[in-house]
Length: 549
Image 1: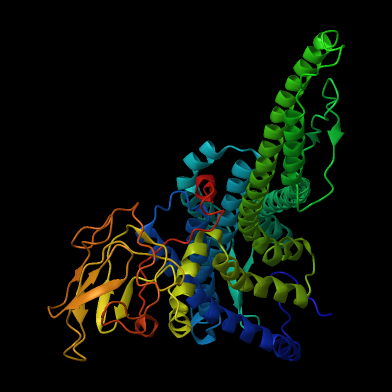
Image 2: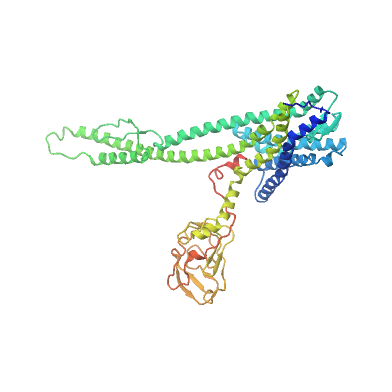
């Protein structure tokens, strides 16, 4: 395979034409990828900016550093587009080429060091459990990234003797007096990047291994909890003077602790019914002491059985809580796993650079890989960004908004319903407040302030006052106008305002006509709007924000 020595290019015209023919499609691919990366970077910045208007971004380290990574990718892509404009760059001065190359290195380094900050945050939180220290250092990650990028890239303004551009490759070549000195200077600039990449590799591997070990442990814990939660003691057997307290194992996975409770309860009842009765035999007085001894032993066994029953019940509850806790811990660890994917991007796209620099005569294939893969880093970062656990609730809101038409057709009310059109009347809400558990037999939605009833003017019969009884059914209608009387509903005042603890259940449960009410087919007149309800995923509500990812 043809090779190209760093800082030199054969002058033979035929050789140059062969090189140009070989990499023409590569340069076209680089330019196309660069044009694609620009809107992807802008989308990341816009999404994070919208989230910053609603939430505090101090604890959302991955989102903040995603913007830094996107900024570095944007700078890198713009430089690639400029370099590919031969008519412009061929006329640039040496200082112009140095400036272009400075921004090229700066964008490249911002991507690497922002990813290193994510790895460092994972190291403090996940491996060292130093969340307090990570929270104190997190506001300075962006400052560290920009500072290191500038410090490493700025020597290109005064170190190298010659800056030239090879039109065939559309890349800038830096040269010093000798190839050895040039390679040493390049290693001084890229050595920091190599160390950062190795650190990301080590942290990513350790985090992934620990997460998989945790998943394996939670699977064992769930299996143990499904089998009863813990080993329980057998109950008292009637007729014995003491409780043997032997271990019993329940092989029924579905019964668990409940079957043990049933057996223990039966044994307790048997022990309680088998009390000593008086006898008229001649040996009654001789056995009185024996009966007293048996009675004392029986009572002690009953007390032990009650304690064992309580222990079995609590162990079953602990098994249920253990399964729930393991599920939350598994989901939380999966969120950490998605954050750890950020560290894999520079490992895939940038590890080729040390090999390219270390090679005395780098091949054209290695040179092309070194040029193309950093451009693909933007696409990989965007794919990892959209699965960031900090954005789960945002995608859930978008999905609920997207399903509005589907919910209308299925005649059901979702949790995001904030308005309903009822036979020409629009019921609107604002703020946050009480929960309605059931509206027309469908799924529950959150309603807070039922403010007004506005007629749509379809018919002259539509503007009426509706009286609602305590059970939520329409019992009468008068010929007035557009307000609902809420005086009959407990916990709701006449204006329709309710507290957060009140429940309006079974409002117009059948959706039909009751007592002369002018309401027909509630299902046909439903409309929904989104009121920004939060997505209550389990790991989102069980400490993911506290971890500061």
